[in-house]
Image (tube, rainbow, N blue to C red):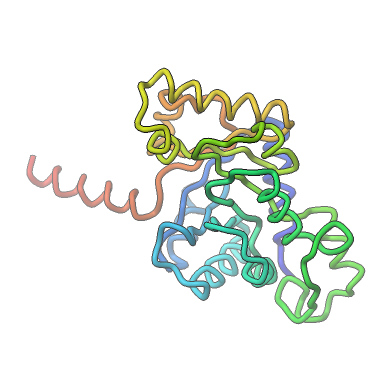
Length: 254
C-alpha cells in the first residue's frame, strides 16, 4: 500500500511547527535523481510539468518511485486539469504546486479537484496503487484522503487583483515565484520587489498558511526576502547538475 498519506502528514506537521522543508524541482525523467535527492537529505521534491520536457508518463513514474523511497513528491502544474490530477494522485503524488495563481476561484478549483465529494469533485476509483489495486476498502480510502489530503501550494508570481490572503486561504503554502514576479512587475528596483515578496509573506500569516519560495541556493533566501520561508525550493536537478559540471571544468582549468 502507498505511504503517501504518512508523507503528506510529515510535511504538513513540519510546516505547522515551523520546521523548514527543503526541496528541489525535478526536470529529468530519472528515478536515480529521486534517490539522490532522498539520500542527500532533501525533505521533498517537486516534479515539474511546467518548465520541463517531462511527459505525464514520466511524472507518474517519478511520483511512484518517490513514494516507494518515502520521499514526498508534489507536482507543479501550469493549470488545474482535474483528470490529470486524479491520475497523479492515484499513483502517489503527495500534492500539487499550481503556477501563476491569480484568484481564490483557481485555488478552490485545485482543492475541489483533489478532494472527494462532498468536499470536492474528484472521481472515485479503487483500481490504482494508492488504493492497493482494490485491496483497500472504499471507506478506508475516503478516510485516509480526508485525514491527510494532498498538499497544496499556490505560486504567486504576478499581480493579483484580489486580496492575497483570500487567494491563498485553504492552501498549505503561499509560494512566491521571485523570478516571474520580478518580470511581471517590470524588473523593479530591489525595494519594490522586496515589498511584493513581503506582501506574500504577510498574506501567508493572515491566511494561516506556510510561506514558501524558490532560490538558487539556501544562502540566497535572505537576499530574496525568503528568510522566513518554511517551504524552500532550491534550484532544480538540471541546474544543480549544470553547476556541478561547470565546477569540474573550472577546477580542471585552474
